[in-house]
Image 1: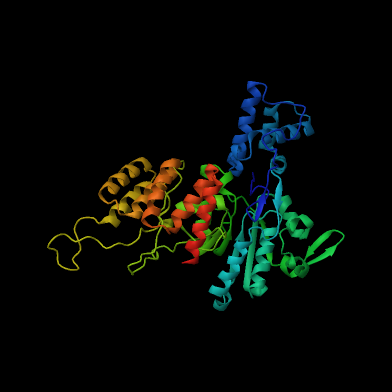
Image 2: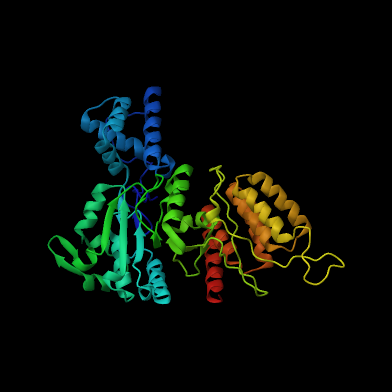
Length: 461
């Protein structure tokens, strides 16, 4: 399991917890689960971590947090977890040390290669340098620098000059930032079969592989907490944001703040790269998936200018659904319109006359609004009633699937998604949801089958 942020982690710059996390870990002389007082103290430590950095304790295992606390307490010869809690609250440096012990960084250059291949393609297609504007990219969390430096190499390989772009890299951990600034790496930072870039952009020394100063100088490093409101308040806007494997380790409230920050910092039609396990969350928040295999990229829809096809083959749009646990309204800026469909005419109506009763699109939009506002049960009930009268409407089945997904009714969500695929076997967003549902269930055979269908759908796009 990986924890990507607090050591500067993401799918391209992520932090991995050892395989034995939660099963044993560090051996300590003290045991702080043997008394009710100690258990309460540990709960308060977890609450402090959640409050400060948005960490969901279960995401890395409570045993690992307890082991880290034991280690720090032994160092200071503290025998009461409540006394250590007081130190955490009063000593910011010690809080950072605890984060250091809780997380272990694991990252390397060009992890998830297709993300960088798509970034290169995007630069070629959009040609941002032609507009004489600085092409701005954000990497958060940046860890020890492998991700932002990979971005810089990609932009140079795509034909941009250093003066054409600006890369900001952000992490909460000051130690990882200092390591990133040194730009010296061991062999473990270079993985995969293609290491040509290492010979081209690095010089081997007794300290390790030293990155070319031009590339190292093209990245600006900052310390900030991206789970707090208005993080990077004096930065942006960005055309590209890399934010990988962060959301899955956060509390619901912290995830909401991260989405708010991304929405504020990313330009309309900007691209955000995320982790494969987070793609569903971005779709539910109104982002449109990019049809590039394994790029894990989404586009932010431009407010008021949603893409709606005027041809008979309507482009699929994704209704926004928030995580049911948030219980808060999602900003209107991130909402999407449902596909445009011809409204039915009443008998005797003149050609072109607009009906007075709501059409299918309006009814589905109303259901979506309820779901956006957190009234998922009522929205689901209305959606079922709609389906009884409109059993041909694939978007209704898709919406019902999303609502059930937000309610954690995975089997029911799967049933509705299967009905979408019956009506439209190449429905791209449904294929994505089905793939991740099967991954969550551990059904790798069906997940692989869905991946094959996704590739065929992308090839035919």
